[in-house]
Image (cartoon, rainbow, N blue to C red; front, top):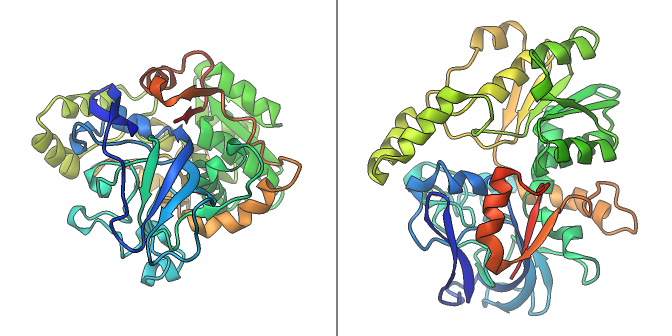
Length: 394
C-alpha cells in the first residue's frame, strides 16, 4: 500500500509499504477514505524528530471502511463505516472505566512513562503505524472505532478522530459560567472548534485570537469576536480591558509548544533537533523547553478565580511558570490528551442531523490526494494558500 512516511526534519514521503494484517484477535483492518493532517503532526515535522525512525507512518485522524476484523471483535463487521480515535484504548481497564481513555492501562507506553498509545506519533507513544495511508491496522477495535452513518460527507464525521472531541474537552475543562466570556488563543482547527463549541455550550462572548487573516475571517463567519494579535502591544491587557476590566472567565490555549513570538524557546528546540537522536532524546526528557508566550499570556489574561484550559501540545520538562501570580490570582489549570470516546456520544447528535451547528463542513480548506501529502505538510506549516485544514484522500 501507499503511506506517508517520516524521513527527517521537514522530509516526509509517500512510499510503498507492506499492507497491514490482523495480528491480534482485537484488531481490525480499515480501508482509509479520508485522513487529515493535524497541527500536532507539525511537531513531528519539526521538534519531535528524535523520537521517529525513517519509514515511520504518520497520521492520527483517519476514517474509512472496515475490511476485516479479528476473532475478538464482535461490534464491527466488514463494510461498517468508522472513524478511528487517535488514542488507542481498551474500554475496560481501571482508567477506561473512569473514562480516562488517554491513560488506558492496557496500551500505556510504560517504558517511556507515557499514557495510552497513539497512532502515528513517535516512540514516546508506542510507534504505532499511523493513518495517513491506504489501510490501517486498528488495535483494540472491540472498543475504539466509532461507527458513523453510511450517508453524509467524510468531513461531517472525520473530525471525531481528534480535533472535535479535543475542542469539546477543552471547552468543558474551561468551564465558562453561563453568560460568561471565553477567550481562545489560536484559531487553527482545534481553536476554531473551541470557539464554536464555546458559543454552542452557552458562553455569552467568545473572543478568538490569532494573527493569520484567513483564520480570523473563518472565526468571524461563525459569530466569533476576533483579535489580531499582530496588531496588539499588550495582549493580556487588551483582553482585560475588553472584559469588564477583569478579563475573561476562561481562556483556552489551543496553540502549544511552537507558539510564535518566543525566540529563546525556538532556539532551544532547534538546537536539540541538531543533536544525535539519543542525545536529543535525553536532553528533551530532562531539560526540554517549550515556547510559552501563549500560555503565559493566557495565564495573565484570565480573570482572578478563572480557568485556563490547555489543548495545545506541550513537551517541556523545565518550563518556568509564574506560580506566584497563578497562586495569588487563584487560577485553575486543566489540560491533557483528549479522552476521545468520553465525548463522542455527546457530539454525535450534532453531526447526524440536517443542520451543522458546529460548522464541521466549514473547516477543511484543502482536500488533496495522498500522493500530494508532502506538499500539503509544507503548505500547512507555512500557512500558505489560506490553509486552515488539510484532508488527504488515499
